[in-house]
Image (tube, rainbow, N blue to C red):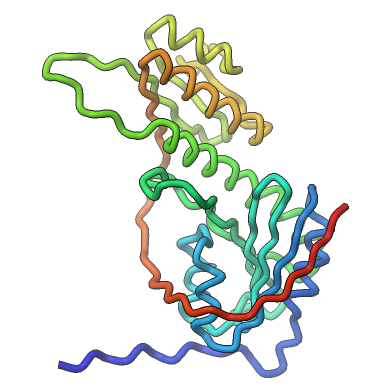
Length: 262
């Protein structure tokens, strides 16, 4: 039996004048923080997959990588460790695609149940693109990163003995970006309040504001660690979403690097 060959990737128009390297470099100057830009030119369609290995997306960016030979990409790395992937939007000649990249060095199990902070299409104007990334992509990345780090710090515990009632705190992400934690034990409540949660009678839970996602992410991690020391498990609830799989082969290409500090 012969395997059916993979279809040839679709290519971009020959007159496409967009320059990923120039766009990414200017974009890095518009984003908050200090960023380093690494630009990659692809000689083959397969080359782009090596640099897309950690792209944290199961939507438009993943589909574009699988279907098109995009020619080039850029990685933007911030001083705080945040990484962004930038490439051409194959279906809109006035846009680029930008996605967050998953953190490295974390066990795959920590990503289970965490919704991907899917990438976004941004205009070719770096200033407008930076505003869209700051307002949309980065906050969702912060939330997903906090959940993954929480999972890494609080791996699943062995099943309790029959008849026992393990203590746990259930945290649920609300539509406005805040986090509601439910507990009936005083030690857990004190731990939550100590990390910035406040009691909301309307929600019937201890609520942590989502106005500052960096502060929220830190509070979630600190609360989870504090509860774990008390022997109390933490459960994070997120919206369920079906996942698709994209095969990513990995041959090596060349790299060009640009560094920018503000």
